[in-house]
Length: 257
Image (cartoon, rainbow, N blue to C red; front, side, top):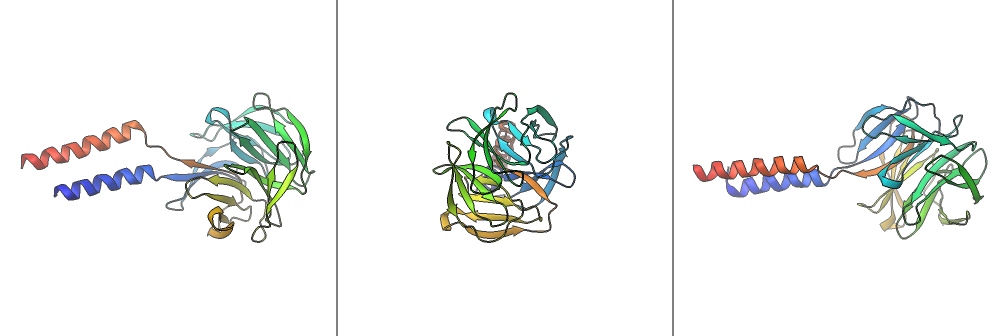
């Protein structure tokens, strides 16, 4: 192998490690945590949440902890182990049909919003799960995510409209959407400056914020999904060390020939 080819292979390996990104989602048919690889568009199961839930949502919270509200029939807040999928109870929020969850890292506030059980906007205590109503939305909201430069963004089930959720509990229409969505949970992707939407009907959409919220259908035929969060994988130091050692060995072998 020539020196040039060795360097190309090394660079390709580094790029592959650096560009790995995926979505966490909850398979509503089995209450398991899933990972959707955004490069290969493959879905793998992480593990069972071990708790009942229906139409809930995921959100990153303080300390890069994953939180989950279980939705209808189980008004509680949990943390989720992203390695095993197991959910651990934080506490009951007591709000019927709290479907959407989102965390604002600039204020350290966790927000939740109702859908069919009401139109309440809430803040949630990430230590004990307690909910405090701060206002009402213009309509029921099914998903929520934080978008830099905008703030908290929520999706409206049915119409596909998007709203800004304000700190005083009011909502402001951002975009009328691009058509029907069925209980769509959303996640912001800073790499693409886009919002991903996992539709309960088994469709994955991407909304391009660089192109006036243009919607693209990326996948279909998925199981019903609730909860969605973006994750960009950072290569472990051991992986980078192993890669560097491999390249060094190839270079030594080349010099000794």
